[in-house]
Image 1 (cartoon, rainbow, N blue to C red):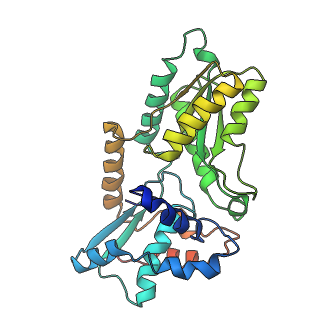
Image 2: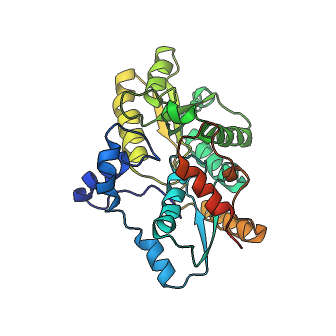
Image 3: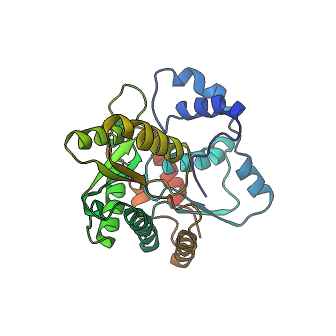
Length: 297
């Protein structure tokens, strides 16, 4: 299962952030060329080494990001490709990928259930007024303008969820976690909360739509920075946050169904994965797609 991961201990935070900001698949910074080799030596792909030595015959790279982005799932797949490319060897095991699943019916049902549960906790006379804010991690506009499919796939998830809810409430797709001065995909979640309050919309429900489990961007950024500190500053009347999918049994069933369907399909990856962004500037991305799409099953 592919995900971003995070520091296990306080002492690991500095190294984790350093790796994060030096990953050129995530973002491009002026000093990366000088520092990247230092960090790369500390990113030995121990898991793949262990899998190869254990004689694993079949591996599925199953992204835990429902919506594909070159900066998330793409980065993980590039790491797998680099492992073999740097060694000049072909994998002993057969690889395939579950690279996206933004509209899987059980995923949509999970989101809808969690949203409805929170809506029911608003005062009855305010319930229909609640603005549902679907919040997803933002991307630099330089990535979006290259043709990254992430914004469209997040939007597809939102539309299916609202369809399941019979469009019961007004809603918007907003973006969080912008870093640095460069232009990022908007509107930003915090700016949206401020703007809605200024326009008299003071009942809101935050929904982390691109995260499937809790972490710092839900537990701190959404729950504390936005739902507590910012909400108090803006005069929000009622604000809640829909629970992340976490250990929901229906979500576990969705994951199992995805794996089952993938195995039965006998396909290496989705058709979408074979298409590079129209303005792609990363040659490794093209090599990765060719590597996986040519895997024998």
